[in-house]
Length: 334
Image 1 (cartoon, rainbow, N blue to C red):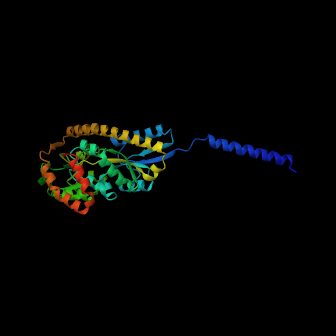
Image 2: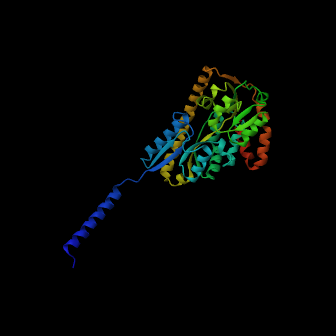
Image 3: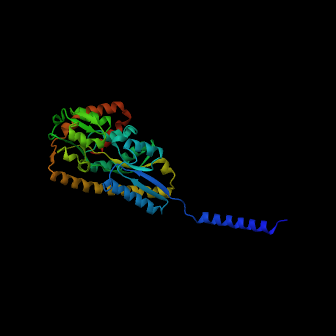
């Protein structure tokens, strides 16, 4: 026979259990905290666009996903961040396609010198069917490309004289990103390619360890390289797209509805980044001109392009499966 004490205890236990279950039902689902990698400082066009992406995703998923952007590469350098995103340790990132080549060989096509004739052509091509083919290659390596950012046109700058012809590069030590195609590019022009970390370039220019480098206007200005290398020559040899990528593991965990929200936010961010980029490029150009930098047009880029033919020939020989991709990009600009 149950005592009153036992009956009261069981009654209280039932009430406690019921209350706990009700509380569990009433609690909202815990938000997914996303970590995003960015090499640029706050306020840079890419950084502003990434922050807009994060805000739009958080708002439109009603807090189910809360992305946070970590600027200035505080979560590691780009090669490390690529691997972290592939493994799902990072959720999303803005990657330049230059250093992506060792991991996703198809993206080396985008690093072929003069493969694009203008940023406008690059955007048009990457937003279409050809861009989807690159996205498929990235997906095979566990990276989902949500949208394509721009990084302007990269040109040569150096400490001693303007570059108007390939002969002006002869003997120059030129810093390039760590990609064999960029090393070959400088070698074909008669220079000595020197891969090194971006953070080391300023001091290396200042002390004469290198004679020059290559980059776009905003990077040339924001890094302070214009202070120590005052000849900027508009070779515009590389027009590299960048991706706003998400880890495949993170993407597959999303509902179909949230996938749609995230992709739309990424496409909106790309449009914002492109607009801000053009504005920043113009401001950077004006700023370096005011500082005394000598900017020179390269009247005949064809002589530079002709020097690149051995690179194309060797690339196709090594990657015959990518020949159609190269020719399709070239034909899309005729």
